[in-house]
Length: 148
Length: 148
DNA sequence: TTACAATAATTGTATATACAAATGTATATA
DNA sequence: TATATACATTTGTATATACAATTATTGTAA
Image 1 (cartoon, rainbow over the protein chains, first blue to last red):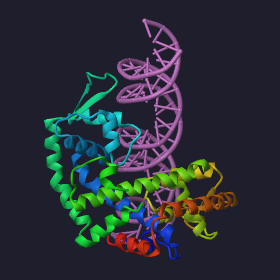
Image 2: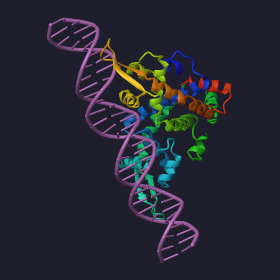
Image 3: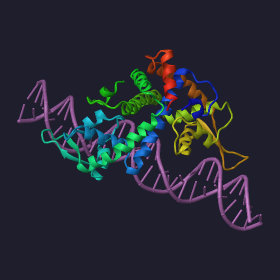
Image 4: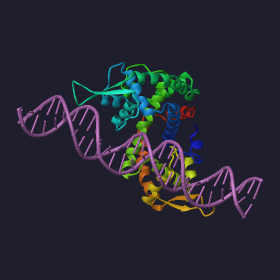
């Protein structure tokens, strides 16, 4: 993913500006590939991430605010995201009986099966996206990302 | 930007999956900061990028398809993005007289002044975003991004 | 115990984006 | 010169997202 080629420019971009643009280009490319992998399953990356969070709860239901905290891309409207997942029968929503302001969201058996179906495809896609990285390079890359 | 802290998990994430998540987290953080910098100017990152592309044309107008090619985040609807910029008087749109299918979009003096106003603020923000990187690390990071 | 503030989620609304279909123009071919 | 095909952009429509306002509930201090 060469910056100058990607945005078709011949002018020299200052290193810091170039870095920000480079990051955006790479993210967009990766995100597009992930989204395309999920597309046949008719689910968005956001919805998929919520399902993964709920699976991580190991049966324990999660509040909306908990989901929000754990989301990779924070969204301003998790309610409607959960609505979508409910209509697909992947999650349940009930009112928390200890604090009726809260809701408890949990993944259904249906939702778990669905995730299991996707796991393999996504694993392969992630391997493909990162095929040119050695293990050491991945560690280096993560170390540099920590600096943000 | 620590992954586990950011998504509040204690479970170990496989390195490749962690890398993809890490990239997304960092991009979202950077994008949010850039968007916040542009917000007082009432312009989106996308609109700003189109203006920058047009400035790069050095007076020569650009077609819609040229803009699309050079955009960092490809959009499915550049027409409406340009509509916004026209209504703000930052760009002009005329029909290309050699090929009437094409349109020619150019930045106005108004648009150039506006960009100049933003440049400094954005420069400072980019410096801030990357303050923990040495020059060598920036080069390393860009080299790793090239592997995607 | 009442009044007020804080919390958790939902709803309304405006805007943004994705995707497909449509429009208008130019080019190629029979 | 008709007709088909390709090209460049625009429009329609459904969905997604951002942000503010609202609703409902709980905690707390007077």
